[in-house]
Image (cartoon, rainbow, N blue to C red):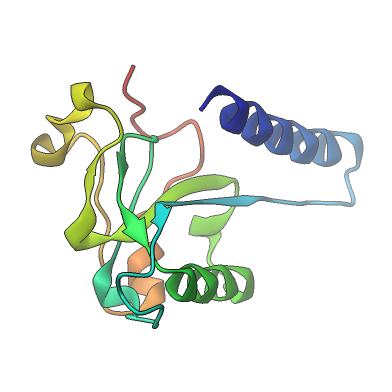
Length: 137
């Protein structure tokens, strides 16, 4: 997992450098951290009502390639400021589990927001910029 985080930090740093070096340019990033890619859902798009987002790299699950692709397209087309300079985990709600055993308490206590919605806009509504959400140690 260390290599993944180093890559994400590199992306964040690159965008920060672009924004600092030019007063004319303003860029932002969105990092989607998909859960395990499985085809148990027959690789169909189940849509936002079946999905859950979280932040902090504490909760994960499974997701189909079809739903991941749909979320990536919706994210790229969105004008929502909630998607600027942020990273989030994406998985099916019914597959949610802690990334590590020591994070099990996070499934119940609400420290890590578990976002849901019937539309993609509603699903991303509660996302926060990096550095402003709870990350367990």
